[in-house]
Length: 515
Image (cartoon, rainbow, N blue to C red):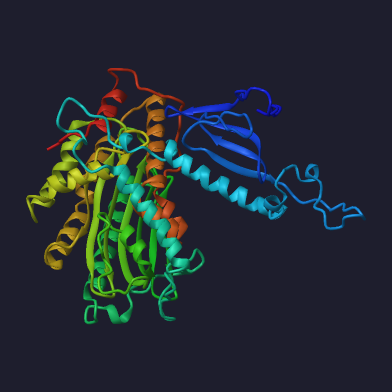
């Protein structure tokens, strides 16, 4: 708030300031005149000797808003070399002031933006590390002691930003002219009536340089057909619609989507094969641990890569039927670095212990067939990954999740991924069959819609695949296929203590062991 500037003879006055308290620090903005012009002082109270205002210690910052500009000189005929009068310059130091012109306002504006960013980061606009964990419980089954999911996801998003900057200017180095683009492009997908027999380039076939690429694509194609066929049988009404597309530089995909069914409001199973290249920062962001996957590449050089995956989300109508999601993928660079990733997880609106024992028990059996350490490791990984940090709760009740898996022979991991994706229907189908005709109330339907709202929040804010696809120009309809058709947000909603909704909320806040 402006105040008249006190005279130099009077006692310095305390300026009335507009203050906003944030994290026990006060930020004051004071309009004052400085030696170079009029502007705003930002800080915490401390006496400013020239103006009589009080601006605080630390965070003192002057933002120039109106530089003093030299007005047309009115020299007398008697002394044409005399400087303009002091009153014209609003200052006693003409030589210092005449260097500043109205164009210097850009400096003040830019400085204000930089300062605002610094204050925002320092004063809590960024998510706090202390709030990144799900609340502790009296049991030992919470998320305490695990890596912070917020830190992992913020690191991932920062890496994506760095990748975009590197895409525009990779330290002065450019990829070869034949290198595929980093951003695939929203308009690079050409629809086709029917997808070719293989979306993998001919040289990458079973007898080519990269045999695992064709094998993985063949495996997930067969899984897509078997899973969609089983879901159509469960629904008993709607069928899947298939869209196919290809890209000029190789790869493509097939999306199968069911909507308005008797059992499923929406279900989708997407297959994609991607050839591209990305800055090393983006490649680091695409992995769980952010490890170096660009070995042998020169600094700043883009990394050609191949990615192939099958992803699925199913949203039933009945609130007693849980939502299910899975994703299984294979990633490989032209330098020969490879890894597997994926998992299957379940998101119920109401807790049924028998359902959770069946779902988790099925995947424990899958894991145990390949390595007894897989299930406890991948179950804990899922509990960490599917956290909605700003809600302090998990998206659902977990399952298995893994990434960067390349610690053994690739054939062993291929067989594990194949076993896991082919266990989706045995793990999920009987649960839907058991509850698809259960009666439900309008209030139970509203609760399901609110849990779908949480699902949307996680997918658009934290999900690695969704964020990465949006940043790199993937096919938008396939990326957003995971979102439900309807969702609900109620202001400050809290379940009634002792209710079924409160019971499952406790499971969302304190992950449990089901088998």
